[in-house]
Image 1: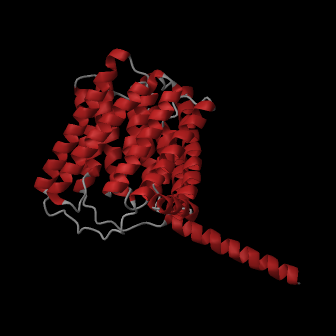
Image 2: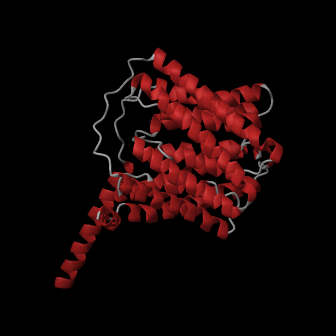
Image 3: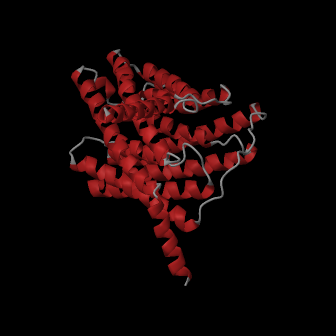
Length: 366
């Protein structure tokens, strides 16, 4: 009898835990984000592809479309001063892309470059209080650039195109502020910033795990694993270990569903106009959903990111099996990146790290 009572108690606790986990996974947040903001982001990212489709050369618009994402660094709480942040992030995006392109000389250089950009982006974003997407797009820029084979004569052109996309994003941000000057939310209360040594230590952890995730993916022989460090960084940006755990579950599940959506898109004949329209529409949907439910947004983030990285080669891959292989590869990338991101978050949010940093500070103060 006591044994049955104990088993019932364990089952009840497990059921409550599973219910709490499910509630956390499906929780939908409220949002005061106006529809004009996702629309402006869609213009900044989709505009270059629409122009490229008009000129019949989709490849020229892909790097510029990636640069257009820098519009999302426009803070709603900073008024016109937020434009300076967009300009600064644009410089960072261009530098990240250039570093990634230069790192194609060897796999070791690619790992080092990706880890360096992740470290520097995390350090600067935490130091300056840059909120989401924070360091994520810088890692995306360096990772896609590093993993996309490019003719040496065209390497500089791609970076120039990304810079042009960043300029378009800045112009869209200026227009957005002029047309919607009332859309300036109250500045949210921020916790006291961590000390410089703590920020440095946390950024080192982030950069190390992002680099390690890519190194393991390369050692495993994965082809173009650009989504591994991106997924790792996305999980590492969780505000707590609990948030990182929830985010990695949402990202894996969302990527699985998102790959089915990408498969449906790739199964149809994809012209340059179709790709441009898809990127524009997906950007609008992502920026509408991401503040409400991260997992739902990932369903649309997945085909968006794959189109930005693969669209130039996609017409030759639509012969069924190649698209299927691509879907499997990106899902495997996500799982590996999320696992390393969760491991890094466990280190990042443990009290042992802060205790170690505290000992360094006290030792240096003597």
